[in-house]
Amino acid sequence: MTVPWWKQPGRVDRVRAQAIVVGAGVTGLSAAMHMERRGVRPIVLERQRVASGASGRNAGFLMRGVAESYAAACDSLGRELTQHAWRFTEDNLRALRELGVDHTPGFGERPSCLLALNDAEAHDLERSASLMAEDGFESPFITEGDDDAWKNASPLCGLVNPGDAVCDPQEVMALLASKLDAEIRPNAEVTAINASPDRIEVVTHDAVYEADLVLLCVNAWARTLSPQLARLVEPNRAQMLALDAPGAKLDMAYYANEGGEYIRAGEGGVVLVGGCRRFDAEAERTLADEATDPVQSGIEAFAERVLGRRYPVLRRWSGPMGFSPDGLPIVGRLSEVGGPDAPIHFCGGFTGHGMSMGHLTARDCVEHALDDRPTPWTISRFSGRTTG
Ligand SMILES: Cc1cc2nc3c(=O)[nH]c(=O)nc-3n(C[C@H](O)[C@H](O)[C@H](O)COP(=O)(O)OP(=O)(O)OC[C@H]3O[C@@H](n4cnc5c(N)ncnc54)[C@H](O)[C@@H]3O)c2cc1C
Image (cartoon, rainbow, N blue to C red; front, side, top):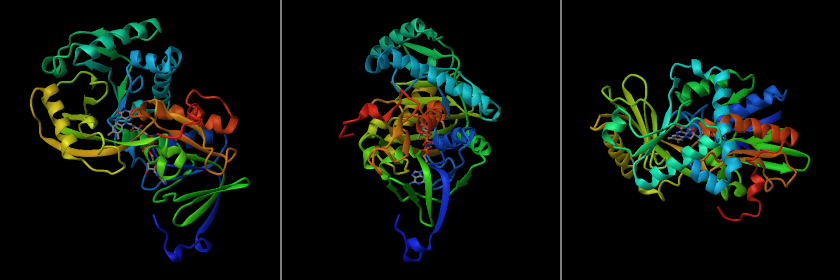
């Protein structure tokens, strides 16, 4: 965003803050909450409104695990880190419940189920189920069910996460915001961060904030504020639609085609369904908010396969996700803005699972920033990386 002459630096407000959090999604709101618990008083700057990014546009799956299956994650990340990631998502849901998320109207206890629609995924889920059992996770492996997904899509098998839940993400964000003393400033897009060894300035169109600590919680927008993050966090658009499907029966929140598609029942006969990014993968690497034909028709076809018939579409929408190179969140100090010692930190890169990870990852980020506490999500695992 450009700045008109009338807002030249001499004329903007100067605001002093202990800490600045940029972004008011699940990560930014949670980071502000964890800071307040530590006695730090932040100001939250948000380019639009609370939950205007992915946190208010997602499918509301509060699901155990990350983007890959347990077996695939064990292969790519190692057993120990995979086990930690799965426990972490269970803990994240527990922490959200402790905040009262389970009393929001759109919350529901709802097992999720990874569905195998082909032999390769069936084999992967079978292997995942046995690894999870070995690692102490309750993970029923099923081969039948009696709802629409099992009747119509003829899955080969499914792996159930029995303790999962679903939510209305807008309600969850409103709850998190209501728990904060911190001021949340909407329409405050951060256009630059100027760092020198003795101070950091965070610039918006009408104010310059001077702070001792800055946390960037902008997920998919990471590249707009840091070239270092541009190499690590790739924006990927996710598209969804809502169907008027009063006759549909979906007992679980389903995740199919290795997470490429997801479908669940909402309130009042609505079914929520999304995915099919791979139908136009290149075009979907964008921050643009748009529902496009190739992806939307793919989602409709998937919904028809699962539900056994077409239902009228009530709403189509999209939202921006931030993908990390290994599918895990990224937490830590940015070395390329103001030098390696400048207290500017990032928390994001949730690869489509921020509702299941964001609240506690933000806690890890705050503890890392304030106490140098180690975290498995550390950005330093990518040190030396030059391309995204
Ligand atoms: C369609 C869709 C479905 C999804 N489904 C699920 C799901 O079911 N379960 C799940 O766990 N995850 C899901 N996700 C992913 C999840 O929504 C995200 O991982 C999570 O919301 C990320 O939270 P965040 O706070 O890091 O980012 P966001 O919610 O995107 O928040 C970032 C905020 O930063 C603000 N911002 C950006 N740049 C600036 C700037 N320069 N100055 C000030 N503010 C700025 C943005 O306006 C935005 O509000 C889905 C995502 C999408 C898009």
